[in-house]
Image (tube, rainbow, N blue to C red):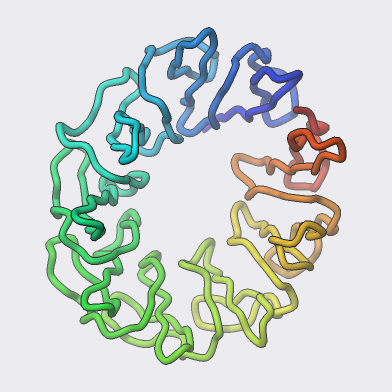
Amino acid sequence: MKSLFRVEVDGKVGYIDSLGQIAIKPKFEFGGYYSEGLTEAGAGGKRYFINLKGDCLSEHEFSTATSFSEGMASVIVQEGMRPRYNYSDANSHLLSKRNFDNCWPFSGGLALVMETERGVERFGLLDRSGHLVLPPILEGCHPYSRGEIGFSFRDGGKWGIQGIDGRAIVAPKYDDAGMLKDDLCPVCENGQWGVIDSTGSTVIKHRFEGMHSGFSEGLIGVQSRGLWGFVSRSGEEVVAPNYPWVGSFTEGLSIISKDEPWLEKGKFGVITKTGEILVDFVHDTIWPFENGLAAFEVRPTDGETSSTGYMNRDGKVVWEPTR
């Protein structure tokens, strides 16, 4: 699906296309990021959901709206010491009669939701009709991924895999776990990370110090001797562990850092799936590629906010940094 990309010029928000051409002139006081052809924007104290033409689809009074997933945006419907969340469609119609303490994007018709009672967090699953398929009773779990038989969950401080029907497929016995995706789930046992499938069979032996939360495009980030690289679904090394930090692959590219990313001096670059450096370590921040472009930031030298630009999958800058 075609998408547009958020830019800010002289304090006003507008949108460009994948070639870096202005598609919607900067006129909004604030604006979100397009997903599924929709985003939130506002001006004059009003907030709207808009389409790719910049047309207003509906006006809403939610204080915050996230990107759309399967036609729904997570929104804050109640502010205060305890914000409450729900889901809204592009016409500002709420999905559920019940509000939650937190909620995550939809995937495969299901979304992870959280309730807190007496300081204790509990998790459940909501479907696209607003029905709780699984009430918020779980001690912990990762979001459901489209097409999977279940999801990773925590019970009694240990992690396993549970089916959508509430049945435990893999008994909770692991110290930590990532997300079940592409029928594979990272798990940690005695401080070492490996991978199991949805039957509980070991696919990658426990031999890594750290591991990304899930596979992306057939690869997963792994940590060995303090540095990160990537392995395949079979555990074969694809990119040697040479970096202090790596991001998951999106559109065949990964954002990497040669410094600890939280350090002020940290610089980011981009590599391909063969480990080839596509963009050298010159950017202060780079966001994952999406719909052909990646946003990058330039830290200010004047104490003001950062400037944001965009590069394409060839590493060419299509929008010079503005703010």
